[in-house]
Length: 193
Image 1 (spheres, rainbow, N blue to C red):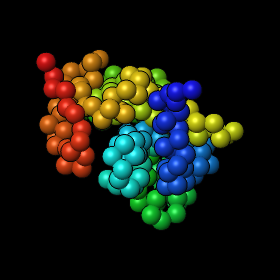
Image 2: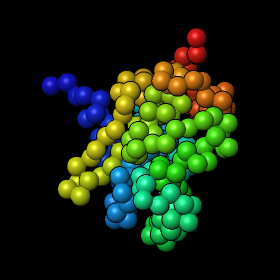
Image 3: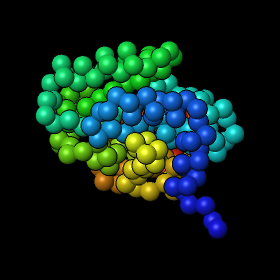
Image 4: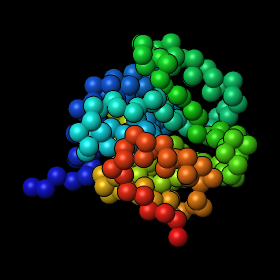
């Protein structure tokens, strides 16, 4: 039987002691609608595909959650501080907790692009700059792994970075590409047409 990309991703994630530790600790925080997203996921795959150490290039663990009941920074900061106190070193300095229900309040000022309000954490993945980055994972209470990948996993495993087809080219596109090429020169970049 041929292994699916979902199964390959799950095996890579479960084989990463650091990512599994972060997911177990995040699950213990009981944040609403949480996902580990971005580099902590796609970089594990790229390291696996290229034979690098699983933690090569990983700078942080982005924890997205969704709580529309209070979109103030103060409410988000409670969870940020809870996480910092909950995670042991070195993870305490590496986790970044963000409420996706409030991203629209600061995104345009920070990134220079408008951002409509979200309705759930996984919806944020649909707006990431490239499909290969648009993957989130959650460790459920019964140890099942939930994978959210609105564009599929083909670009992730082929190490292909192409612009997200559902949004305009990100203002920081060239910086994103330079950063990725600097760590994984094996990537393929499909430029915007």
